[in-house]
Image: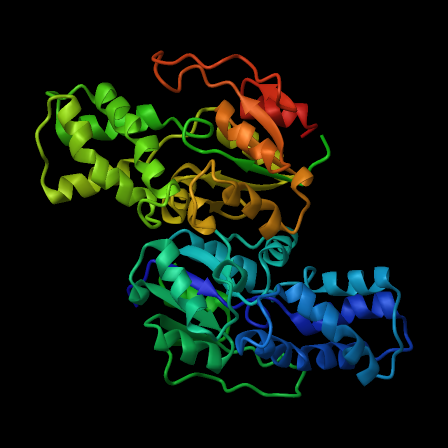
Length: 230
Length: 230
């Protein structure tokens, strides 16, 4: 695969959103709330909240705002009541404090020697900067939904990566643990690499071991580095 | 100065454009061309070329395209003839291969421990990524004209930094060696730091030693790190 840049989905592909949100929820909501179920309930509201932006029903808002708006429903879904504004703010920031999967930093560090690396996430720019600074993710730059003003899988997000990197789409590879992300990337001419993350959903959903339509399927970002000769 | 992010002008403030362009010109054009005079002649066309975009006379184009268009005039100004397309392409890439001032990498490396760091330059995203990867500039993300779709000193460029970093403008400091850049940043509510770069223009213009209107005036990025307690 002859590419110059790798762009990464982040939630689930590079970082463990479920474990990180559950950790912060346990800290902020106490033992009376099932923290993992709360993380799942919040994530269940993720796609529907973006759909209202994708459809044009509402103008662009950054993911933090969508998380804040969907928080009461997620709390109610696990039988928790409302929380004060300062706790709600802290819970939204849980998404800025997610731990990377163990292979992410070593894999990205190897890949960066040979490839331009960027997140291409639905998370906002500040969220992605916070994640990277906390975890040591060695991005060259931050790309994604907020830079494009649209949420994946809208085509403008995928188009923004080769445009801003001054590369043909076929010189950019989208790396993700989600088949629909890779389908949309291929439709815009990007190369694709699938990362199998069996633990992303804590067993609620079991992703396939590989994506036959992708250029590569790997079990970790370190395996991706090896496959690309890094 | 209580800020969370520092955004940097790049050409002249972080890297030595004159020395770098002259080095590549000497390599590509040979000894018959005064390479430093050529660098100056090309830079003389920099502001006028952006003015046509700023005024709306033409739609957005990235700086590489402006450099390419102004190249024949810069060559003619030093008595050089036209060059083949491949040489012209390489000359445009000279602006992607500029060396940092000696204090830039050590100063930025110290600053990054405490502050989010980004370029806020009129150079394109790919140019800024190439400069950073070549020189080891430790940016957290790449901001600037291409992300904003406008050239400095248009206000949208300065506004884009606090917006994408989710910070109030007063929590962002613009660092530059050019007074007009800092004037425009202050008009948008950013804090400002002036870096004295006496060698930027090879003696053709002598910048002032300090900017009394800035929050800080320093002689290097290492001095900036010291002034900010890093």
